[in-house]
Length: 389
Image (cartoon, rainbow, N blue to C red):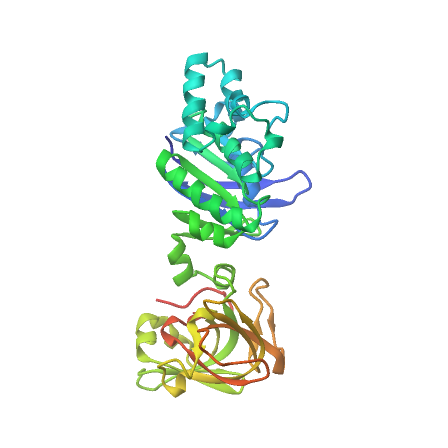
């Protein structure tokens, strides 16, 4: 097995467009690292540079202890799984899985052992004589995985391998791939635009935006302590609600109040203690972030009244286990993607909250919303970075 190390890697195309900016990542041996971000953020470009399918403009790439900037893809000891599976339609599953071994002139007995072991792991034993056209989407994905497994590479590279599957099958396959990677213990770099996929599969997740690494961390850490506004909004579904607010810290620093439009929410001293840098924003604007699951119908929540606010319900979506409540406030909404955009939507700023289904809230109701203030996020409106220490 092997580590993968990218050290200040850049990708600049002949037309001057820079797709990757000083990307530095250290992927440990046997680690499952997911690259995630919106379309066009550079994640597939980064993966293709590791694979050798894109040249590196500057910086260094190592697989194991070997510098591979100028090493041909076939000599990098990696196996890549593509979005479109790239199976040969005229070949059987057995021959598709073993094609790379045939090219490498692996002895037939050894090749047969590897193919049958991979088919056993992937539950393809009964499909070995079939052609790809006779398989389901999930089975074709397994064949593509099998072709990578038999090579026994130092690392797997996967470029959105589940994007062609329906929603139910994607859930099943992401669990299977994650389990398979742990069983095989192969260093894996996985690209997706789906943040739920990233959070459920990766040991660590690297978030990219415009070719710049925003944060790399364990999934729960990304969720609990996002480094900036973009990560905060990108990780989590529905997205974090972000507003511009004015912060006032008590004279004795025993608490604070954040004003959102015409309403305010009290911030307890425990929050100030956990985020000591907040006191530096006394009397200033901050970006206030609260996740949908950190709000509840005040009638069902055990929260002080000064940690609640009023809102007009715009839409209710019943999901069974919970309900998504969309409501309006007069707070100033923050655009998570544009560093300079704070858009005042006056009386129509929409917030999404995840309520317990026992809430009797309905469309056109006015509701009292309780906020879990211990879970609030604060960001510097200038740097867009999280306010902590």
